[in-house]
Image 1 (cartoon, rainbow over the protein chains, first blue to last red):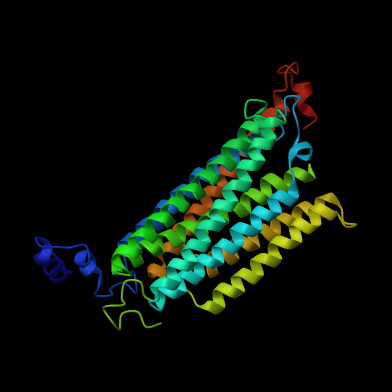
Image 2: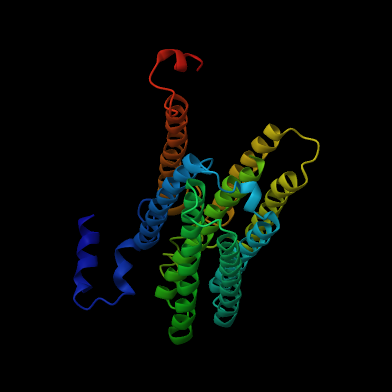
Length: 216
Length: 127
């Protein structure tokens, strides 16, 4: 342990970010490979708890219509089905980009990232269209507890997707400039987790908000 | 898995990262089916009871989350030395406590404290 610390500390003065993970290279404790990836995973889990709080809030408020519209009156399942399909396809296109990264094919990575970003933009566009339609019908966030919870939960997810799209754009610039170096690969892995995590959250949204809402 | 054999490949070795084309396609196919069924059930309401539909939809969502976790997020017992799985399980427990706990508390609060009901024990005894 001491030996590891010493060898890692020695080049610290001239450390560039590629050697930052030197300490992890001895492959101790069975494949715990990068503190960045694990740390990012922990961040995602804390984000999951944030969503848990929003799901709980929505669950508590979901029948407080205050005389306003109920889910059955305002939700359009075909629109939700389209959005679900878009997000699901974007998950596999991101997966293809990761496979291309493994094979070191920079152009293919960029192509699949672009496709993923376009799908993400379509998703957000459909969602904004849905929101504007609801608001035009008078189903605004202020109308009832149910609608407050709905807009907060679905809007937070949409905001995450928007951040993901910006991140994909930044990664495309980074890869265009620096290529598939180790840092960019690590960032792409973090972004991969982020993107797939959002798809998992969407499963909860389309199930508990839309599908079960229509069953009420 | 070849992690640890080549220092250059170490950090993002097979065990964390990417899965294979096959695992991605399999996960995608499963997810598509697990999405189509609940939408079809709710939109067409074939001759099944509403309670049955609700239960099936919830069950399929749980299965789909697990499919995504394994084939897209690559959470396995060996990934990152098991730490991702540990954090995932821990988060899952907190998530269930938060959601089910909130619904449970608020359900009883709503049932017992409706306006005009007062705090009389007769009103509550129906529960």
